[in-house]
Structure formats: C-alpha cells, structure tokens
Amino acid sequence: MKKALSLAAVLFSTFAFSTSAQAEIETYKIDTSHSSVKFSIRHFVAKTTGNFSEFEGTLTIDRSDLTNSSVEATIRIPSVDTDSEKRDAHLQEDDYFGAGNFPLMTFKSTKWTQGESENSFKVTGDLTIRGTTKEVTLDVELLGFGEGMRGAYLSGWEAKTTLDRTEWGVDGGQPAVGTEVDVTINIEAIRQ
Image (cartoon, rainbow, N blue to C red):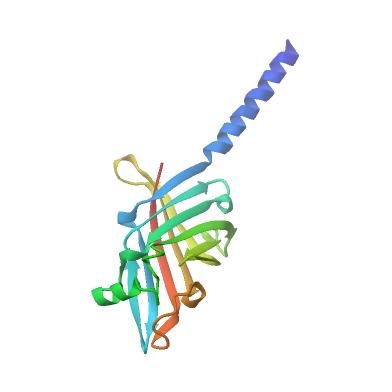
C-alpha cells in the first residue's frame, strides 16, 4: 500500500510539474491597431521616413525563460506608406521591392539571447525580402506584461535594427537614396 501511495505521489508531482511547465508557454498575437513597423533611410542630406500598415505575427513566450521564446511575422509590401503616393508606387517596382512577384516580407526568429539588462534581448532570425533570406539580429526590449481592456492580457515589445537593403536586392535610387535602413518596431500583442 505504501509503495502504491508513493508511486501515486510521484506520478502526481510529475504531472503537476509538467502542467506547470506547459503553463509557462503563452501565445500572443500582434494587435496591429496598437503596433507599428517604421523605417527611415537617408535621402541626399536628410532622412525620409515611412511605415508598413499591414502586418501580422505571433509570439510564443516562455515566461519562465524568455530566451526560449520565438516570433514569426509577415509584412505586406504594398502597405508601405511614405506620405507620397508616387514614391510608394515606385517602391513596389522591380528596382525596389518587386511587390508584384514578392508581396510579402517575413521574419522568423531562430535564437533569443539575453541582452545587457533583464528586459533586453538579441533576437536573431531569418528575414526574407524579394525571395532572399538573410540572418538579422534585432535589439529587443520587453516593455511589460499586463491587463488590457475587456479582460485582454497583453505583452509589449520594442525592436530596432539597421539593415543594408542591397543585401536583399532592394537597390534602387543609389546614390541619392542610402543603403542603410533604420527599422523600429513597436508591438502590443494579445495573449490567446
């Protein structure tokens, strides 16, 4: 009888630990109405800014160890907005994004490492633009977790990086248009 009770206790504690460990993994979907994907690029002696208004993504978060987390996102190239319809149309053409053949930009993380502070991370992943995939690293800051409206539970993130656009074949406009693109992404995501 004691052996049976001991076995039951071991099985129960193993199940409880397993359930607890699984409960640490949470899935969040990006709330696009409270998120942004912005960029700036050199134009002659100044900088021109823009954003992409149509995107989606999912974060899988391990609250017990955030370096076990992952993120996947997709951006629709035709949603680019630089406050100039003529320029936005040109960006769809083959010397820039070639949106007719490559309407999507995607990112899928492959590694999260701890940064210099508790809430900072280096998130490395595969960025695909124009059918070309290159590894990039984002400097990511966890802004927080907390309650939102109507019972929603949220996570907030900010990511920054600088890309050399020519590595993905986006090479139009040189030398008037610079090659380095500064990217800033702000994310509010809703736990599912």
